[in-house]
Length: 208
Image (tube, rainbow, N blue to C red):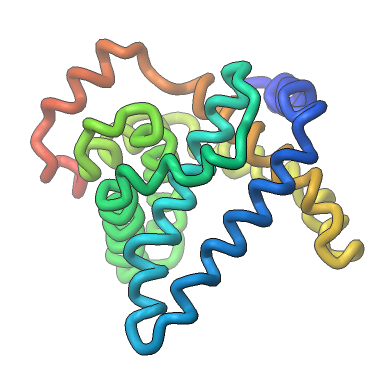
């Protein structure tokens, strides 16, 4: 897989959209703060409903952007119609990674990459179960985990730039990284018929 091609494509895809993507990121941040105003249960609402739904909505925005669609602020809310699915994927992914980490740090880290495409999968396939999406992610990432790891490392200097600019550079770096990861996902995702076949697999196969 050619990392330069993925990143070059991402630069082209976000060109002319940085302003609206920045506004979207601000809206996401502000919405994420709202539950904290609710006494006692605010944090729980944020973890269960708001954060996973916003993450799913953001993922859909970038998938659409890479596909040629202009992002809109209203798209931020598209993840809330599947908030339960978003929560289940977030919760189960974290749980499985934690359980693998009990064996040792490295297995948990490897599984983190194995399950990393589940969010993208449910963004495109909301009718798929959470465990099935995680299973498909694991299959997709077979032979690609190291590529994902190296791709992430290739942004280190950009993250350093974000740090020394006190976060200002994130206005560009955030969209750049997100679009690149969608390009990575598109590169390794299976044909639609394979996705449909996976959706019929029993959910307990994810623990393999």
